[in-house]
Image 1 (tube, rainbow, N blue to C red):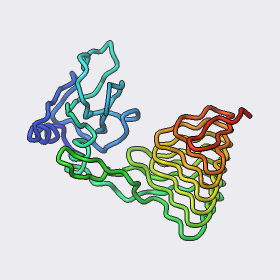
Image 2: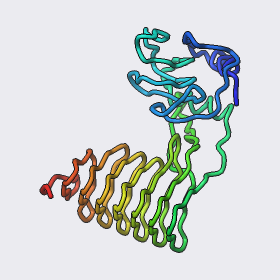
Image 3: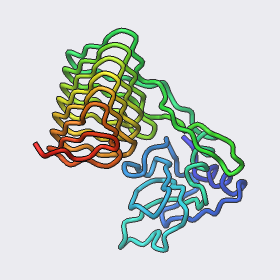
Image 4: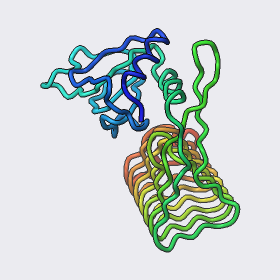
Amino acid sequence: MIELSKIVQWAESNNLDCRFGSNYSPTHLIESPWNIKESTPSNISFITEGWLPNNAGVVFATKCPEHIGNPHIRSNATLIIVSTNPKYHFIKCVNEFFQPGKCIVTKGKNVQIGQNCSIGNDGFQYIKGPEGDIVKFPHFGNVIIEDDVEIANNVCIDRGALSNTIIRKGVKIDNLVHIAHNVEVGENTMIIALAMVAGSVKIGKNCWISPSSSIREQLTIGDNVLIGLGAVVIKDVESNSVMVGNPAKLLRKQ
């Protein structure tokens, strides 16, 4: 755990502007990094654009909202550090004070895992700094595999970065599938050979992700969706949709 005063000293030494909430205390303890939507006062996080209501202890942001500390508006951040590149400075600060632990892979009942699988390693995420330097994004999340999941051979499932990677109950994953960090796969969804699911994708229940298909990062796929053979999904998909092609387009509703 790190006292806020040490983070303030680090920020000021890097010529970053610190803004203090009404609940600021120099001895307040920060326990770990986590994503902004789920952060508590014991977490450090970041926002790349705009402003989201949050309860984080420390937030790196491009600007400080005028209403910080106003009890009538939900912005309860204890400390805001203003930066032109909040994600980069968040990584630098986290690397200074926090060390990721070993990934914990939690498995439910009746889970089957095939040969040569890689589950729980860091995802591929790097950020370019102002001088062109490349820094690796730290990974603090784990992997949760619920009941009755079957994972075939040579499957890669990355641990979460600032949240967990979650494989829900009844999911079936074929050979040579890649599931990136922070992905959540809904119940009874099937992901077939050579499919690639990029970071922070949310897939609903009862979906079929066909062979050699790709889903871009940060997307939401609804329930009962069929992604066609070799499809490249670049936009969110509504429930009960059949998507085909590159880029993937709606073929029909089912």
